[in-house]
Length: 322
Image (cartoon, rainbow, N blue to C red; front, side):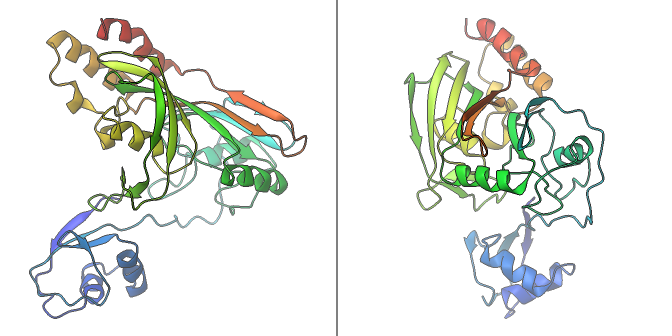
């Protein structure tokens, strides 16, 4: 979703939704009204109402939301999967970075779902035919453990555990700068940004979000952190790390990209720039997930080793941090 900016020229005395319908001819008036209601349309930087009368001089920023792709069924694809755990109810996959979990706008094939339907004959259908087995998600460029349900009973049980925050998740992240405290809790509600609806920010009017953290390696340039999210908001760890002025290494969206390499001595800047090019993603990995098995009620913990690209950061940290 990329925001676009227009001037309301020619829209004098027109309703906002009617004016936008002349600009966005591919969308229905109902879709446009929903965009306005969802805060995806800003008039002079502020949310507005569908019936707002324009004077023709306003600056309008709008973002067309993601729409489910028109796919009637999932075509299985032989994409290799790293299976960490499997029984009659559950599959745990070590998702590589770059793999999208399910189809979406601009991604009609090559997803985890396409791979799952190839490798497994039985998957839950609670979330419909386009998301078989999918109980939760990881960002495209976040690697690590993701749980998949083979049947609807297991799916419902796991979904309930996620909702009640009974599932424990542990992440390894590499962030910029040294942290002042060796451990702590980040308590900051998260809300979609007005200026960029594809991003989020800490905002007291948002949804409650809580993250516990432990500093594993504290460095002047890069640090290795264990994150333990207690809630499951979109981009939570990335937003919380950035709110502490320690964005995730490689996370362009939240200030952890190449611009952050400036200000160091040339030798350090060179190493950092090369690292960013090699990993080509934000340095965040879902290391471990612990849950109660839906059938046996026993505690199960599944771990995924640090992937090869992130080990490059570990190796470079000795040089970077002196």
